[in-house]
Length: 62
Ligand SMILES: [Zn+2]
Image 1 (cartoon, helix red, strand yellow):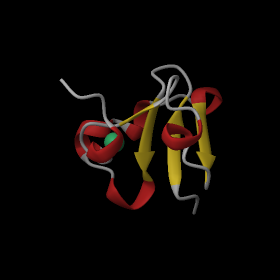
Image 2 (image 1 turned 90 degrees about the vertical axis):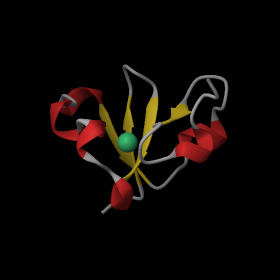
Image 3 (image 1 turned 120 degrees about the vertical axis):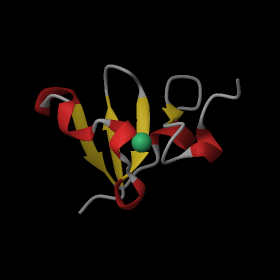
């Protein structure tokens, strides 16, 4: 399993082992979903954000 699940549309990065019901991973369409070991929130901080539920450290600060 990849470390991260990225939604290419919402630009949210989820941590695979940390996902919650609020992440709605199952509703991400296959062609919008990127399973990867690369942390998009760190590599592309201006384009991707951590999910506020499973990856708070990289989520947008309210
Ligand atoms: Zn999440």
